[in-house]
Length: 254
Image (cartoon, rainbow, N blue to C red):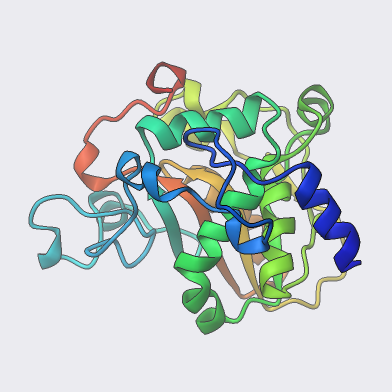
């Protein structure tokens, strides 16, 4: 198995999703990451950040535990964390992974998530990773679910199993990026449904690519909780910042 993985890495080495260059000098698992030269082109989530959703706080944020959104609204999930602040080069890379068949970026972003949030994952001790599902029609059109790719890569790093068939998307809703905050919430009503009647999990970690208003995370968390799962956490690769005001998460920012 190690020989096969080495040959795959040799033939298809990981590339930095920011610049497109091969990661590192050696063909190893650790090379799957954003290259040092591109670090200045991305903004990582650092303290202070919201203790509920993980969103980096704006000026004066150190005086509050929560972002403006989490002070106003109650979320269904226990806690969320993210790796990068959405925007610029990292937003373009996420767009490539999501819409331009750059499935290989998932390995890099999962490695970055593991390096940044591995301690938090070990602390919350989830029993399973649950990727946010796509509607079957959208899955057929795209050919893959980017959240499932991220979950699979993260599972290989953490040893936590992936539950892909636990929850399904039974409505082909409009893309969230096309909607405002209120429309996002209404758009996802009854969008998700449990696929398994018997659930023995008590704590899970939902995996998604981008956290914006939290509407998707809340809709998934509520569905899981209604099935008896007590604690739902959320890990996203990118998240908006509390200091970004009315940031438009649509394609024009990509």
